[in-house]
Image 1 (cartoon, rainbow, N blue to C red):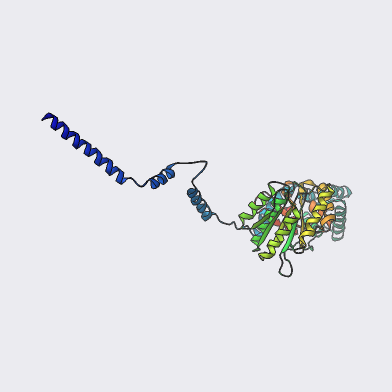
Image 2: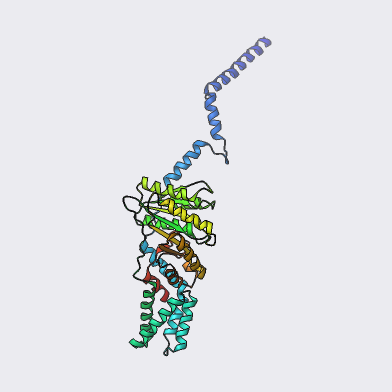
Length: 375
């Protein structure tokens, strides 16, 4: 009897275990589903799952917005304040001399020295001082406010209020305007191209960027980043490739897509290297097989002073510079470089950079500049 009870118990227990196992098997998902679940639950910080990566990318694209650059008028107001701070010592020195009761020869010599120290240049300084002396004598100017007004008028005339400072960014016969940007290493040339694209986009122009600085590894990446921020396409070539080819393809892209302006960033040329300068001439010639170059902008670092004039002279001989961009004008009290470089090249300063911000490049305005000097 005892044996029979033990046997029955074993049978019941075994059946229960078998039933549990069977139920467990029926409730588990198929092997392939189980494998998929297992894979999803494994975390790979260095190698995220493709579906997870795609979801995050979609989310990033959904939340990324194209920047709307600041309009030119807003830039001028803000940049005038910065210019006034950096150039304040020049204006104060000039006004201090003119505010004296007796403007003798020593006072006029001091005025000349102040202008020369600000990199105005010998010729323009002589013109300004002679015109001002004549005006003070003829008009009988004997109070500081009238002297300041006379100085303002003469400075505006000297800087050149009648020069055309418009960016020539319109091509003919349905072709885009083509702007070559040139300059030596370290002037902020590639950054200037990116900022100039923002100026054009703010003016509702469509733009293509050409990364023809193929010798500096980071130049194309830097330029493309600037373009992406405002929805502008960048044409680039292989590192160390032919810059002229990149310029050619950039203009071709601009024509095909009906773009308004093509901005071509060239390699930072050392003006003492004749071979590199010859190559820059080649870039211009090859680009013009597609469309005429409408503007050649020379980027000059305002803090370089007279060395910037040497650069301007050499570049002007190679590529017929049509306009100047002065960067870092807020980093020097030598605002006279504006006058000197215009005299050297016979072309106007068209843009000035006064800071590191994305919209710290503005069209050059003569009266804003002079007023900032004298504030």
